[in-house]
Image 1 (cartoon, rainbow, N blue to C red):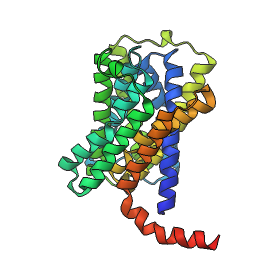
Image 2 (cartoon, helix red, strand yellow):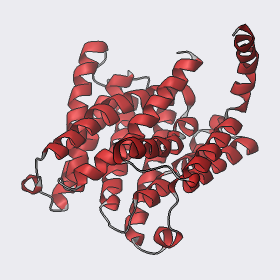
Image 3 (cartoon, rainbow, N blue to C red):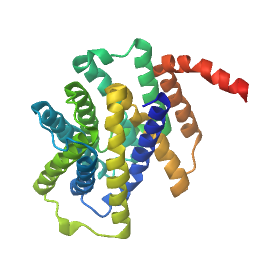
Length: 309
């Protein structure tokens, strides 16, 4: 995979996950939250298992390390993150802006956890400053009400923060275990395991299939989340996790709000504000600091291309 292919995949992933916020909000109006997340990964997991059966010679993990990696992904990245996030977002006091800010702590959490589990992926001081700058950009972009962030919906916001922590820990542990499983196999079994856990949680919470309203909007939201944000999105995510490492790939949570804002502009007529533009610029500055060495190495080629135009 070339550097440019990595960039393209990263942007596609950010677009898929950023635009998914609209689908989540739409679906939650018709489907109970944890059951919604479980159905999403029922569909995505079955599709990915079929894909793994066709594309790999190891559609089922064969080692203890392989199942440990699947267990970490199923418990933390899928069940833990999505169940807590979906429950938290059902609280009317939690706006999309507030949720975006909380979820965007994931790269910071990943950086801290990587110091314990992945010493080779520790950031330099300038790199850490880039992560902080990206978080500031997300806060500016989201323009949350300070009183809303800290006052109302405290339990729901704690759940979302715990969700971000689960995702960060799952990313780090999956990277550390490195069971050398085919990505398709890892993704399929992690999704199915996570879906099974969420069905259990859904049952314990008293959610029921009879509460689902199968409207066109609900079906489209579920289909988009299962096919684009989940099956395609996590296929890209696990591929990039191996290439970039846990810290850099989780920076996608900084870029996703950019695409969420653009999707809101295109589909919901939400006009970008000055804060939106400033947020874009600050996030970009954070990425420049993080990837300064890679950018510096590419400058000679860029100059050569420009001189030929």
